[in-house]
Image 1 (tube, rainbow, N blue to C red):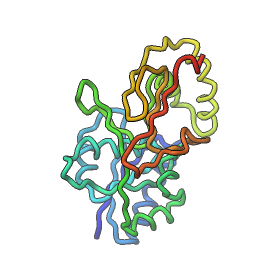
Image 2: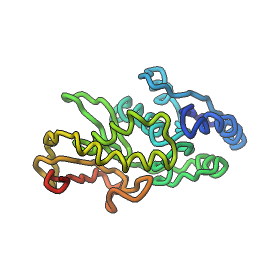
Image 3: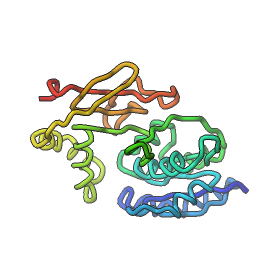
Length: 235
């Protein structure tokens, strides 16, 4: 039998991810895939990183944060010449942008059927360095400057917010963050853009939970799109 590791976030979807785990395990077994289960925590977990790296198929059960938790362990943990585990998604979070961007259906039976086909495709991922040392990774996008400040403000109050309440809060937080933001310059150097900007987003995919950040981002084109905005265009 093939083997999989289910990496589930017990907080995703008001507990929907944890509740879905037994059904996913059963559905995978019916298709010849034996699954172990690991639950994420808010703390750094090197044992989970090791388990993800050692798996044949790593299945993220949750939202976009759970997907990034799996991807981060693989991107930062494997050598450049090493073939890592395949990654699959069973969406059970708030936005589920990654699942939609990469074509994983919301129904467990359909997601498991797709996983069982064994078909794969290579996608891009970004690595975050701090003083030259890899610190994190991202599959969807990364915000810096005003965009990063807005995401941090939302994350600080996210725990009680789910679904459309979270989306509404995201838009309401914009004016509040803008009013107190100090606008330190964010320096960007890329093939097309160079200079200091107030807000920068690195996008590997274009789709958001509502709308899109860019229409050109392609996770299979070998590059990350840069959307940079000057302070004069914000204030």
